Amino acid sequence: MKFGLMFINAGPFSQPELFAHMARTAEECGFESIWTVEHVVIPKDYKSPYPYSPSGKIPGPDEVPINDPLLPLAYAAAITKKLRLATGIVILPQHHPLYLAKQAATLDVLSGGRMILGVGSGWLKEEFDALGIDFATRGRRTDEGIEAMRALWRDHPSNFHGKIFNFGPVASFPKPVQKGGVPIHIGGHTAAAVRRAAAYGDGFFPAIGDAAKLRELTAMLRAECDQRGRNFGEIERSCLGRATPESIALCQELGIERLIVTPPGLDPESFKRGCEQIGNEVIAKG
Figure 1 (cartoon, rainbow, N blue to C red):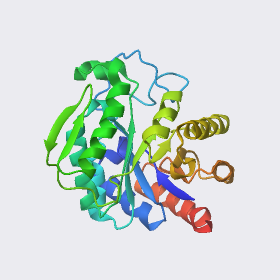
Figure 2 (figure 1 turned 180 degrees about the horizontal axis):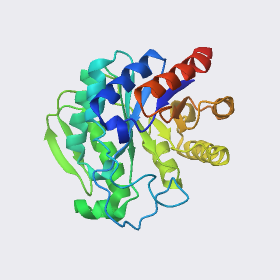
Figure 3 (figure 1 turned 90 degrees about the vertical axis):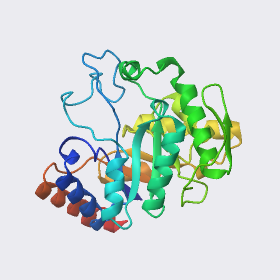
Figure 4 (figure 1 turned 45 degrees about the horizontal axis):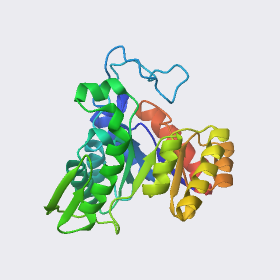
């Protein structure tokens, strides 16, 4: 079982001292990965329902700082040796694949092949409106973005000709260190996310811990893979949860390989204490 830390670029972890402490401590305590989130802006009085809370609102005030998802991972790459560096998630349809492919490949090179690119299609329409991007086309933009980035990482010269993105032949370097390119993990817990994971994903990350929903999503993904002739076992699966025997047992039952937990403290002392406890009582026991 692998263990990751989620939301590590938000709130107090947006500050350099605590972020650096977090990354070093996570690696020392045996965590395998750290995961960032993304919102470029939070529009005031948004009406779009946040899909991970019964209230339909993002927890906490709108003024909570959320750093860019990639820059902190580059910072972490410089001060750690083994920790995997993941986005959980980047809102892919808000990025042009030429730029995002370059950024992810660069981070993969600088980290020695430790990058995981988690992507999602987004839920906050008002954020898309602020960016001038059509919310209704986000699914197609996500699918084409994945295909385009893989072409850029794989081919020289690189070409892609879709309904939204169209380029080539172009030279795009550096290429990622990891064979096959940066692993792309599909975020979300909808039927569309399951279909996208089966079609395009190296991994699948529904950022939930509800047992019934995870069982349902696992069955849906298996069925979708069977329909597409895809090997279900080649999709690395992660979930959000607590570092408890119950969560670990659920992951083992469903074949989920990575349990991603929220930081066990919001100041240096409590964070270190919480990570050491998880490391000694959970991670070290396998």
